[in-house]
Amino acid sequence: MSSSGSNIHGKNIMEQESPTIPTTVTPSRYESQKRRDWNTFGQYLNNMRPPVQLSQCNCNHVLDFLRYLDQFGKTKVHLQGCMFYGQPEPPAPCTCPLRQAWGSLDALIGRLRAAYEENGGSPDTNPFASASIRVYLREIRECQAKARGIPYKKKKKGSQSKGSDESSSTSMNFS
Image 1 (tube, rainbow, N blue to C red):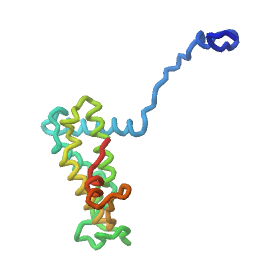
Image 2 (image 1 turned 180 degrees about the vertical axis):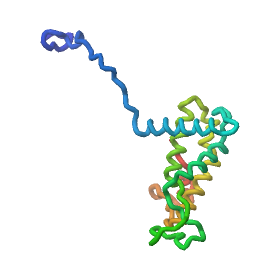
Image 3 (image 1 turned 90 degrees about the horizontal axis):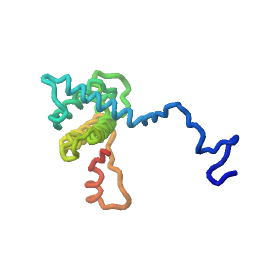
Image 4 (image 1 turned 120 degrees about the horizontal axis):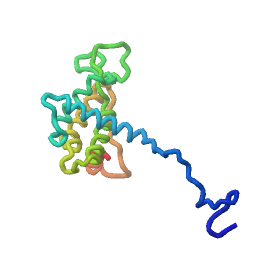
C-alpha cells in the first residue's frame, strides 16, 4: 500500500475517474416553497394595473396580497353574527367564509421576508418586515382565535414575569 492513498485494483483513489453524473442538489421543501411564494408575489405585482416593480413595492402591496390570498383559504372563520361564532367544533355547516389560516400567513411572510433579502433587497427597506405587517398578522391571529373559540395563549419562556413575557412573545421572528 502506498502512502499517497489507498489502492483499489492497482489504481490510487486520487487517480480514479470521477463519475460523470451531474450532481444536483435538491432544494429543501422550505427553499422550494420560498421560491414558489416569491414567484407568486412577483406575478401578483406584475398583474396589478399598472404593474408594480419590486423596487417600488411597499407594505401596502404586501397587505393587499395577503387579502387577495384570503379567497383561496381553507379555514372556516365564523362571523360575529353566526350562531357558531366562538365554537371550536360547530355541529353543522354554515355560510361563513373560508380564509387563510393565521399560521399559514405568518409562515408565508417569513419566507417572503427571507426571499426579499436573498434577492438583493435591503433589510432596511424590506416591506415584509414592516410593523404594519406584524400588526395585521396579530389582528388576524386574534380574530381567528375568537371566531373559532380557541384562546390564543402566549408561550412562556422560562420563569419570566408577565411584563417581560408579553414583550418577548409578541415580537415576531421571520427568519
